[in-house]
Image 1 (spheres, rainbow, N blue to C red):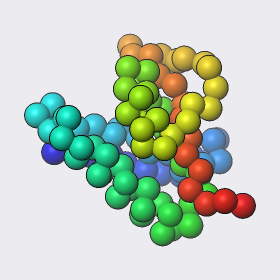
Image 2: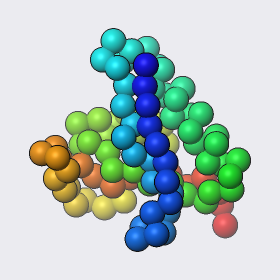
Image 3: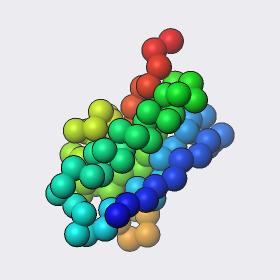
Length: 93
C-alpha cells in the first residue's frame, strides 16, 4: 500500500525520510499517517534527535498534520515538482 525510506544525510546533519508514497487507492484512509507514525517511532527508538524530509509542496499540509514544520520559505524543484524542506524534532536536547 505504501513505501518510504530513511537514511542519514551528512550534508544536512540529519536523518531524512524519502520516497514516502502511497498507492492511490490507499489514500484518504489514514494509512499514510499510520505509516509515518511507525517510521517516527523507529527513529525515536534509534535515538534520532530530528528528522527532515523534502515534501512535495502540494502535500505540505499532510506533513504538517503529522508534526512537521517547514524549515524555510525556499521552494525547489525535484523531478519537475516543487518541494519544500520540513523538519520534526523527535528528542529534546
